[in-house]
Every structure is written in structure tokens, then in C-alpha cells.
Length: 319
Image 1 (tube, rainbow, N blue to C red):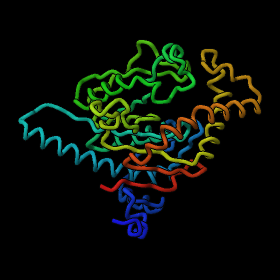
Image 2: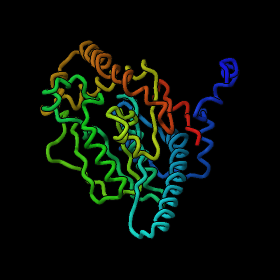
Image 3: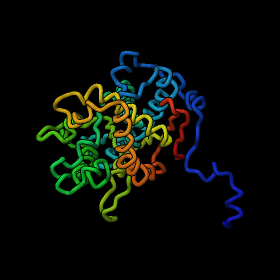
Image 4: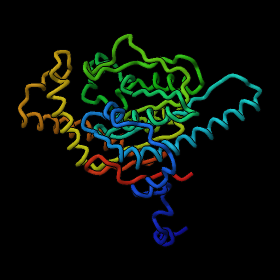
């Protein structure tokens, strides 16, 4: 096909995604019931990422309906394979990834999905982990001069994350994942969370959609995902949200004497904004540009946010 023919094609024909406006996506809810209350939402949302009932109805109910259909189809295929093999026991969890920049609202999305999906009859057991637990401990990062690259791919124990996902996908019982503390800004020694053969596992993290850099024979983390969601927003909004969150943390968590960021608690308003902007541009924006944003095209679904944090457009990868 020559260049002139390619240029003549509508871009939507070349895109691997089918795109929806907010209203178009909302119409796909069908008769899916709302199973969350306002109190539920207040517990699920993250600081500076407020979510409304209308947002759940318009965006997350259609998404939970789609995922319930996908999970049911995957469960049916697995059972057919088990019958073919003559195997009676076994369970293969459906794994969903939630990716995107710092401050984009991954945690809220992951928690809302967990709550909604656990209410579907075929997926009563839904668990959630973040890849923060697979960061190398601070002692290792300091030794390797990587503290200013925390959240970059090299700051994670990729081998441990791959082993964890492989064991979960194989249906093993009580697979342990390390636990991270945002207060101490470090992995908690000896503390684990056990994942015991869930129907669905949601994995939230910055770089979970990145391709493997260690050679073709080693699987990608994303090889274990059945479905992946990328949260997208423009950089100006992300910077504003990060600074706003930093300001709120200065008034709350940073004031805890055990907080790693206690040194920021007594900054003036101007100093707080300046410090947050420096951290954003020097670390988080660099990670976004180099590692996170390039993985957007690998996602099954892209949710694009407007400046008010509401999702304005949806792009679903064509099957």
C-alpha cells in the first residue's frame, strides 16, 4: 500500500481503538444496577481525586459490565480446556492492570472497580495489589543511587513481580506480595499480603504495561494481564493535581512524626508549590515521558480525563 493510499484512509480505520464520547460510553450501561452508595464512594476515593455517583454510572458501570462479560467468557474457555485435559481442579484468576501517571487517579479507579466487580455473581472474590510493594527497599535504592528514580522501571524488583504474577496465574494458593508504606516511603520488612486464588486480581502501578527489557525469553509483566486500563490526562492537569495533592499532604500525612516527608510539613505555601513543582518536573514528569506515556498504546482501554478529573472520552481496543 503506497503512502498516498494510507494518507487517504480515515485515521479511525487505522487506529486499533474504537472511540467513545462520555455519553456514548454511558449508554452501554444497559440495565446494570448501581451497587455503590455515596458512603461507599467516600471510602474508595483518593485524596484530590473526587468521584461522583454520576461518574460511576456513566463510566464505571459500563466498564464493569464489559469486564463481567470478558471474565465469564474467559472462565468458560478455561473450563473447556480443563474438560479437554481431564483436569478437575484448578482456577485461573482474571488479571486486570490499571496504569498511568502519578496523580492521575489510579488508586480510585482500581478501588471502585474492585467494589463493583465483587458484586457480580460470577466474580465474588476480587483482590487488589499495587506494584509499590515490589519497589526495592530504600536501603537498596540509596546504595544504588536510585532514590531520585523511585518509580522508574529500575527501582522495582521485576523478577519478584514476575514470580508473583506467574504463581497467581497458575492458581497457586496464598501467594505472598510485599507491602509498601506511603508513610515511611518504604517497603515494610516482613509484612505480606496473601492473594488466595481470587476470581479477579487488579494490579495497579505506574509501569505495569512496559515491555520487557531483559531479552525475549523473559516474559513481560503485561503477559499475565487479561485486560489493561490506562488513565490519561494532559500534563498541565497532572502537574496541577500533583501540586494540589502535595499541598493537602503537607497539612495531613506529612505532619506525622513518622512520615518520611515530615521535612515538608512546615514549608510556606510558596515553598510548598515550588517544592512540589520541582519534584514533579524533575522526577515524575520525566518518568511519565520516558516510561509511562509510551505504554498507553498497549492498553486494552484508555480513559481520558478532563481538567476536573472526570473522564471525558473512552477508547476500547478492537478485538
